[in-house]
Image (cartoon, rainbow, N blue to C red; front, side, top):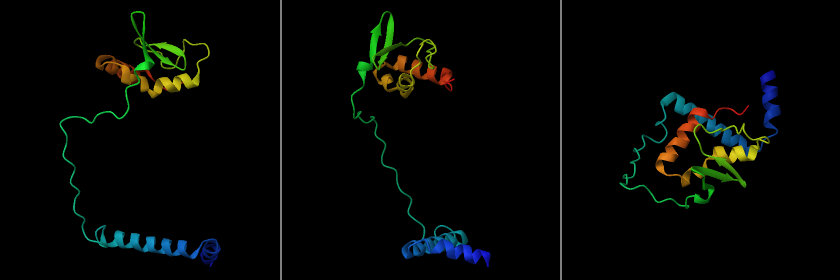
Length: 137
């Protein structure tokens, strides 16, 4: 009795098409559970993967080369008009900065600047991030 009252209270707040859709979904799922996923429409043909290209696709956007600037004997990332020197291990939490700006840390971890690095520097930066970037204290 109590279940029926709860159901009636719930039903009065819905439109008829919502109730019909819900009943259809319940029936469809019950059929799938009882007879398997192919019971309603039969087995579907497997989708063939497109042929693999021998060359990777060209990038849509140009690399953000302006974010990486030469800095003495190495390179630095210039984000939000502030420079972060790229040296291993990089201080990903920006502990050496007094203000420790969250937006700068976000931009640094977003890693849009790695597009401008050569392959060796790219691999070093990503490996350093994997090894040293942990939760921010």
